[in-house]
Each structure stands twice: as structure tokens, then as C-alpha cells.
Length: 105
Image 1 (tube, rainbow, N blue to C red):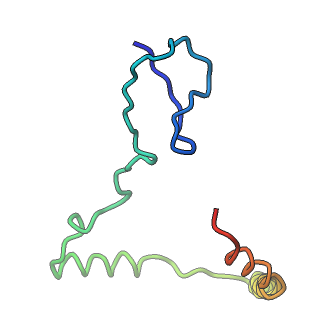
Image 2: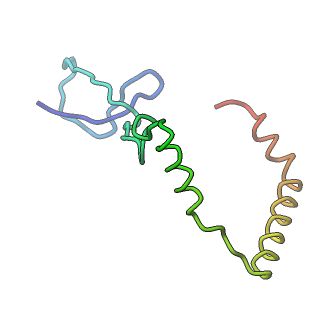
């Protein structure tokens, strides 16, 4: 049995690589999912629990996360970068909108 991997283009199945299949060969096509379904990362809602004790545990876990601490220099750099980003967005607004409104592929 020969296996050929290819994609559909323009409603046609075109073999990308040369094959030695004779004209008129019967083939069977099996579709594979375009993306793989992965298991969720972390806990699911079923794993979390809804008892008062479980909820208290969530709150305790959240409150245990330390608050970020930034120096004055880091705050200045943060604010400067935010200002640069806003200015870039305003300067490029028309081009981005035109791209969004452009013809659909």
C-alpha cells in the first residue's frame, strides 16, 4: 500500500511529489484534523471543586502571589513604552484599518 500526504487546493487533490501510481488508480482519501486537540493545561472546572473550603483555598492561593515591585526607573521605562505604543497606534491607525477592511482572501 502506498501512502501519499498532500492537501486540497482549489477543490482538487494534487500530489505534490511525483508518484508511480498509474492513471486510473483508485485511491481512498482519509481526512485528518487540521489541528490536534490537546488535553487542557492545569485544572478543569470539575477538578476545582465548589465547596466553601475549596473556594477558600483558591483565595488563599491567589493572595499568596506576591505583588510586583518596580523601581522608579522601571516605572518610568514602563510609562515611556506605553506612550510610544499609543503614539505608534495612532500613527498607524489608518493603515491598520485599511488592512482590516481590505478584500477578503
